[in-house]
Amino acid sequence: MRILLFSGKGGVGKTSLAAATGLQLSRLGYRTLVMSVDPAHSLADSFDLETALFHSKTGDPYRIEERLAIHEVNIQKEIKRHWREISSYVISVLRTTGISDVEAEELAILPGMEELSAMMYVNQFRREQRYDVIVLDCAPTAESMRFVSMPTTLEWYMKHIFPFQRGLLRAVRPFANRVSPVELPTDNYFANIQDLFGRLDGIGELLEDPRTTSVRLVTNPERMVLRETQRAFVYFSLHGLTVDGVIVNRVLPSAVTDAFFQEWLASQGRIVEEIEAYFAPVQVKRVPLFGHEVLGRERLEELARALYEEKEDPAAVVRTEAPYTFAKRDGHYEVRLLLPFAVKGEVGLFKKGDELVVEIGTLRRHIGLPTSMAALSPSHARLENRILTVEMKEI
Ligand SMILES: Nc1ncnc2c1ncn2[C@@H]1O[C@H](COP(=O)(O)OP(=O)(O)OP(=O)(O)O)[C@@H](O)[C@H]1O
Ligand SMILES: [Mg+2]
Image 1 (cartoon, rainbow, N blue to C red):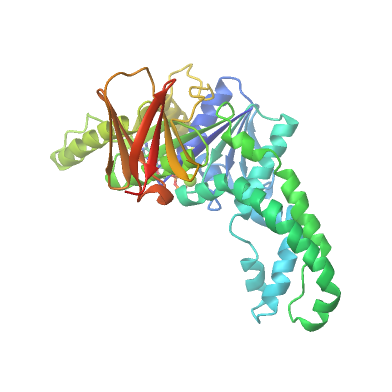
Image 2 (tube, rainbow, N blue to C red):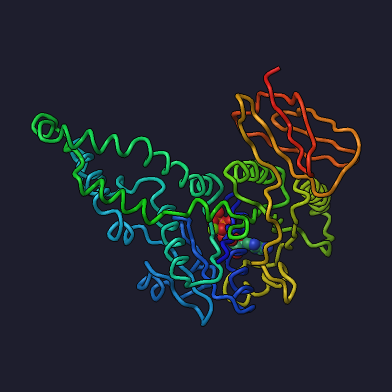
C-alpha cells in the first residue's frame, strides 16, 4: 500500500490537489481512498457532493465510484467509537472546575485526536488491504507536523510514563479518591489508552518507509508561502519522512498579458526558479491558476490533467532515500546529505541565517536547520558513498 501525504500552508490547494490525485489514481486502476485529516473538512465540498447525503454516512469511507472513496474523519463519531473512556475521564476532571457540561465536552476533544483517529484508520485499512493507495489531505503545516510526530511522542509516553502512572495509580486510588476532589482515572482509562496504542502499532515505520509513504508539499509562487514550505521540508525530513515532490500551485499563465499582472509574473518567475533550485533533486511541478475555482468532478479532472500526464502514476516510488537527515552522535550534531550524483571538487560549507549552505563544485544546496541546530556552525565534512556528513558545532 502507498500513502501520499499532501501538506502545505493554509489555502494553497492541498485538498484540490489531493482530490485530483485520487481521480488520477482510480483512473489508473488503483483502489484509492482520499482521506481528510483536517478537522475543517472540505473534501466532500471539493467533489461538490450533496452534503446532506454525505454527512449522513460519515464516519466511514464514502464510495464515489468503483475504485474511489473519500473519508472525512468525524471526530464526534470517533470519540464514541474509540475515545470513550479517555474523554469521559477528561470531562469528569473538567466538571470539577465548575464549567458547564457542554463546554467540558467540547474541551475534551483534545488536540491531536483527529490525527490519531486518522492514523488508526490508515493502519486498519492497511491490515485489511482495502486500498492500494491512501491519499491524505492534511491540515495546514503545523497540524501535519503533529500528525507525523505523533507516533514518536506516543511511543515515548507508552514506554516511560504510562507504566509508571498506571502502577502508581493502582496503588494510591483506594485512598486518593476519598481525599481528592478530582476523580482519578480508572483502569478502563488505561485499558483504553493501551487499546488505542495497539491500533497504532507499526504506523511510525509505515510513515518513515519511503516505499510506502511520500510527502507532496503544495506551495504557491509567493515568498511567504515558500518560507513555510521550506520549513515543512525540514521538519518532515527531521521526522524521517521523505518528500518526493513539490507542487507549485496557482502559477499565473504566461498568456496573462495585462499590465496589472506584470510585476506578479516577474516575481512568480523568480520564485519558481528559486523553488526548483532549493528543492533539487526533488521534482517540482507547476500547476496554473485557473480562471475559476476548482469545484466538482469536471474541474478536478481538469486539475488532474494539469498536474499529471495521461498515464503518469502518482503512486510510483520515485525516491527511496531522504534527501537529508539529522542525527546526534557522540554528543555532536550531524547533517547527512545524499548527493544526487558523484560530485567532484572542493566542499564549501557556510551558514546563512538558520540555513546550512553546502557547495560542491557547481552544486549548491540550502538546508534549513531545525531549531536545536540553528545556532551551530559546520566544523567538518566527509564524503563517503555519495553521502556527505557535516558535523555541526558551537563555534
Ligand atoms: N490552480 C487553481 N486555480 C484556481 N483556483 C484554485 C486552484 N487550486 C485551488 N484553487 C481554489 O482555491 C481554494 C483553496 O483550495 P483548497 O481548498 O484546495 O486549499 P487547501 O490548501 O486545502 O486549503 P485549507 O488549508 O483551507 O485546507 C479553493 O476554492 C480551490 O477551488
Ligand atoms: Mg484543505
